[in-house]
Length: 617
Image 1 (cartoon, rainbow, N blue to C red):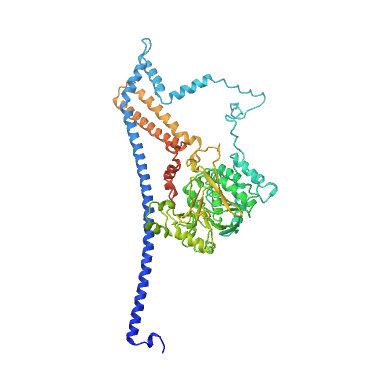
Image 2 (tube, rainbow, N blue to C red; image 1 turned 135 degrees about the vertical axis):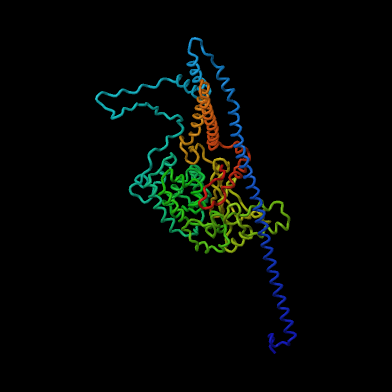
């Protein structure tokens, strides 16, 4: 007899049906409980991360409010002090000099006013010191007399003899003439002269727009032909973020070796924050043109129109070359590959700028990404550039049960970046195992020592041969000029790899922030001196007898207006000084942690169309 349910007696069939239904319900309930538990774990980690970041954001907001309130209070106190000191100023003014009996009192009073207004000015000390220095200085050499028979044109100009010696002989004279296409590509060569370009940039030179455009037009098709996922073999040097620090890049290349004999891989973020993003890109592109099969560059999250507009690279391009070069530069950024595989005898290492994505399960998924666009706010392209690993510090002081939950975290939204994910052990380990990979190499986060190995608190991490699951490498030393961090790079050989640390370059040329010129930067100082000078002059005129009291009141209002304006100019000047002065608290032993805290809000992906308004280091 058949054992199918249809051949069984009614009671047995009914019991079998009920039992099967119970089994299905039990399995369904178990799956549901497991799913709820996973969701609970993810929500717990997400809530913990968000709570931590919210506390940091709240501290920053409170600090900003305190600073704003302090500025308002200082301005108000300055206004009150200006009002209360008026009588004392006039009293001191009259005590300075008594009129002689031989001269007209009214004339003498006017003379005293003029003397006092100059003496009371906040810039009088400067003027006196300047005049004294000029009086003690040797007289300038007389201008050479123009020979007879020669005309100087419509207007005669005074000839000034300039001392040809540099005030600081150790500082070389910057290049004044830009590098032309003929010089950059000698003898109509298809490859640029890299050594000439490097030396020209080292001396603060620039390219002509034609030379810059020619360089970008030659590198664009080379990058466009490369796949999303590069496949490379050791030996090779791997570098992280550069961020416009050109002179540090030269130091790194010197430590890594000559690109003509050494294979290189850069993980992105060549621009923004530093002042030499154009020089960094042009030099790396020149190396790429010369060595297309041994010099490789990946894309970082800063190689986008959104972030270059939000930070300073767009302004840098406009300042140095103009809109056409910036537009072409962003088109080249769209062509940069997204990831790379490095293989040696230890295994295969997966390299990308940021991290993993839940949409990328196998390596073939990377090849399906359309990279020729500005990175979107979400999706696999965004995740590769923006994601971060779960920090081991978040597992500190957890109970055994909480630690087990921590191990099961895979992907949670990234509150620090505002996009991408924070990926945990449950995401990294399966991805590496499924694709037969050894380790994830990434950049994207500044590190005090230049690199960081993440073992995700594995219990086998203490074994001698255990490799970290994730290695973060950062190659911009003394980031933003205040972090005090080291740079690092990885050197892969056939049988192993090693991490090398590099310090920052010395005697780097100084630039004013945001590419300000000397006149724009010093304007608040000049206005402060002018308004104070004017306020003292007008206040002195109040001592002149006047028949109409209404005019006297109007003059007092003008004096008050100039006094208050001078106070505002003083605050503007102090803010300009703060732009070029490192805060005192960033000079201590904890400067890295303090700089990272101040710079925290700049880590978040900005909204489109919103300019940077956060406090920057």
